[in-house]
Image (cartoon, rainbow, N blue to C red):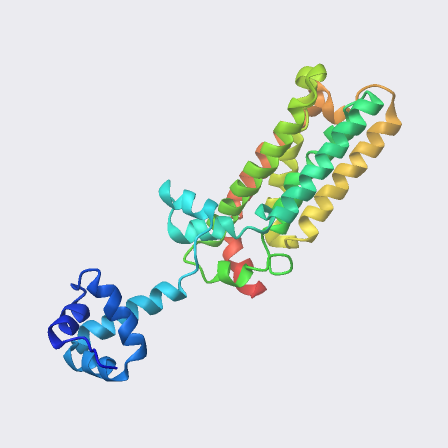
Length: 272
């Protein structure tokens, strides 16, 4: 090479003060010229150079934020909380797509059978299943990251639960809008959904994140089967008395959940 970057330009380059187009020429030349790279190292401040490498390493090591995570951070959510929310398994496309498909199919059956019973029976189970998939080492692939996060076990549970309920109840609500002819009857799934989810959460420290929701879901199915065999009218969980009972169960389960909140830390440590 007959041309080299002069020392003054190298010093300006090292300080980040070299302006285009000379900057572009220096970049291109330095990639091909070992002598100029050696000269640049000689005129560079080692402390500044090391700091630059550290910033570059940190930038490369930090995972890129997704669209939802970036939005949550802009709204003021702490970085680690936003990461835990977006890592919730049931917020992944595969789960959401499966829920949407199931709800669309169920709504189609409602129109065919001219009865909202199937939809009302299924809708409360979806948030319960979502919470079960979002907490615990057996089902959550990001469980280890959640365990070492600076978050109380109960708070982590509530963060994940809010995310699940927002997604699940939101999709259920959209499906309800597709049943306008049933009026308020189409919303009869809401209180049972809250009751089932709260009960499953309250039993999790004692029974685990798989067995607890499984038993609660099984009890719900058994109740519906018994109600179906009892008579030809509306199923008892979707009557006024049944709705009142669901509200009472939800309130009691929330109270029990508050009482056992500290056990989630023990559950965390024993599950690792």
